[in-house]
Every structure is written in structure tokens, then in C-alpha cells.
Image (cartoon, rainbow, N blue to C red; front, side):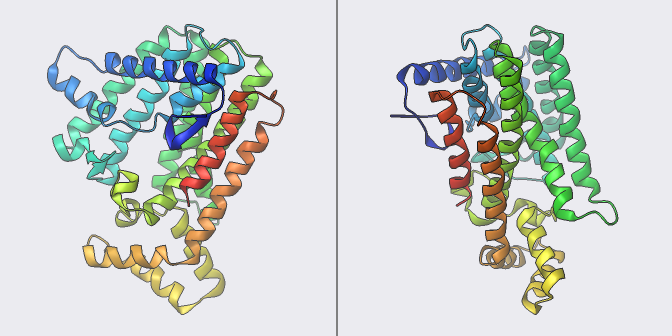
Length: 336
């Protein structure tokens, strides 16, 4: 049993391990090639997060999904480069919107070069992803375009907040399905589609990816509260400081509205205060870490991971399916 990819995923089959490792290595080369520019400054900015590393979660899913067809098909690796470039581009933009100082254990691009360069570098990565995508055919372009629309819609809905009368938790889960689930679903779809897998298999893997993507983001929400920067590679409580309500906060507010406990109401008031103050931010973070709302968010993460696992039921038994199931467990473990 060999450990590969994010979260220490173990692969039981040597041939599958070799395929995954070779595929991820090719993706890494493709990312570096796609982020080169004739302008050295642009190359440095565009490769900033590539060289910082990362889990390469989406390319891994492309490689595993491709096992249900021909994993050596020519479109598999380029499609994995496309989804990772798209993901990286959104990180540049997210860090500007969140005013994040750290990403993947290094200074965020906006901290190092300012907001304008960070935004434009994200745009540059989108452009490079589009160039690669154009060679993969009109159906690939259509799939990516629809996913990107969902991704941006999710981001806008997050910024706008729930409409009057809409349950905030339900709204937030819809946001995550767009912001995160859509691109993870495309990763699985591209892997299966580019490998020539049957359409029913493509659909199953797409559904799996959507649910796993939401579980993955919910685990991130939990980590943002529960972990330190060494574990997550990001500044803890970034969303908290910016007043962005992630699931633990929404579960707290839900509980406060339902039970009216003074300690819950007091914590909500603290979260509504100015958390740019380091002491107040630390107090809020510590209180949330000890609150039942964090455990409820963990249970929500488990639920989506179990839904992802259940979606795989129609697929034939094989080592690739076992690895996809193990990813569900890994996401849950990540959330503690």
C-alpha cells in the first residue's frame, strides 16, 4: 500500500499508483508550462501559488476518474491542468476579496504585490486555462463554461447573502455547491469524459464530485476555525475576521435563534463586533472552537461525504473506486 496525493490517500494497486503518480507529475509540468510568460514578472506572479504546492485535489480526481476509461487518453492531463489553473485563479481573486495574508503557507499574492496584480494574475491564469481548453473540443468548453458560471454565481450569492425568508444554512450550502462543488464535479467529469468512459459512468462520477466538493469545503470551514496556520497553510479565522459566515457560524446563529441561550446570544454579538481587533478575534475563535456549532458543522461534513460515497454505488468494483471512497473518508478525517 503506497501513499499518494492529498490527505495521504493510499493506493492498493501498483499499476494504479503508477498511473496516478505519472499523471500528477505530468500535470505539474503542464502547470509550470502554462504559467510561463515572456514577461518574467508575470511568470513569477503566475507561478507563485503553483510553486507553493497544494493538494492537487482536483487533478487527482481527474486521474482517478480516467481509470474508468483509457487513463492514457491525450485529453486527460490537459483537462487536469485546466481545472487546477481555474482553481488557482479563483484563489488569487478570493484572497483579494478576503484580504487574506497567507495562502499555502506563503504570503498571498495580494500581500506581496498588491490587489491589482493579484486580480490580473488570476485573469491571466483563466486565459491560459481557456487556451488549453480550446484544444479539448467544444463539449469540454461548454462543460467548463457552465461550471464557471455556477462558480461565479455561487460567489455572487455568497456576497449578496440569502434573500428574505431564505434559510441561511440552505442558502450557504447552495453557495458551496456552486463555488466549490461545480469545479470538483468538472474534475471528475473531465477525467471520465476524456478517457472515453460510458456516459452513465460520467454522470455518476459528476454527481460524486459535486457532493465531495461540498464536503471538502465544509471541512475547510471547520479547519478555518479549528486548526492553526501550520496545519491549514492559511491564517485561521480569516472568514471570521472578514465577517463571512461559514457553516460553524451559521449553525451557531441557528442555535441562538432556536434556543435563545444567553451564552449563544453573547457569542453572536461578539461575532457581530469589530473582529479586526486581534484580541477580540482570538476570543471569538476560541469560543467557537469550544462551541457545539463546530461539531454540528463536522456532522454536516460527514453527511455530504457519505452522500458522495453512496453516489459511487453503481460503478464496478475496482481499485480506482476504492480510492474514490477513501477520499470521502479522508475529507471527513480532515474535518476532525
